[in-house]
Image (cartoon, rainbow, N blue to C red; front, side, top):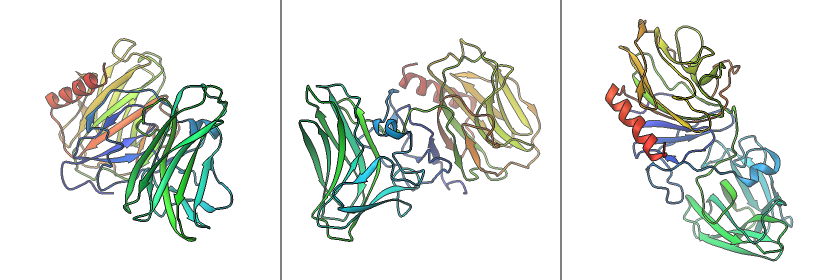
Length: 375
């Protein structure tokens, strides 16, 4: 996949822990269970402002049901099932908002209902919020419900033919012992199709940026993002349960593990290395400059003249090696080495731009991210 022709970038969200929304010139991709996807623009989710936002820990209760992907990237319909024989369901590649698949709901009768499995571990008297992206037939009404033992509440929207956001919040009954979400296509004619994606049910009264699950050692692959001779810059937000001096390998990204290689990793010698073609630069880390349990910010550049990175605003050391004009053009693996044998124990958000940022710009980008994330 070639680079975009302007200063836009690729944004890859491996698990979604940080509310880092790309700049307007950054293009969104998300974890897809093994394959990255490029989008023409950044879909602004439920009014989330562009730029950096505060990190927020959150989990998708639908993922907790069966440890699968509520964006259907594993090819199943996850926890959703047909209610009353009114529809047929499929994890479809026809179109998708998140990743490569969405939940395809084909009406069998005039009004279709599909339902997520019941969440039985709830806090009675507390608010719960359901949210989804849907793509329906223009002019048709679609509803999203939250249901508990005592009743339900719905939100409705009229489809415009494109992807739209819908959300609903309900404070469940004081005696409630379960909660679930329903999706309803009102007045559908047999054979009509709607698509649902990025469905989330969370405890709380506010819709959140979609996340499949909070996970460790997940990875994503982006098809060949770098061409020979290209320059690039990146920003990686890494949350880890380990300190920098734990003595364990962790790969943030790898395009190729053998020469000519391009990879960013924390080695067992407790240094972070950036290697690209024949260049190497590194920075020693410990529990102070890479503390456990928080986001650590790595911004770097790759170019035919040098490579450099800044860790939490501190630039890496001297450059060694030489450029050989044999830039690796293989797929980029995020959260593992190319062979899949050195996973990153944590969660990564990674953005890439098609140009080489200078030292001062890398430091400014790092500090902007850190300030916005409250670091």
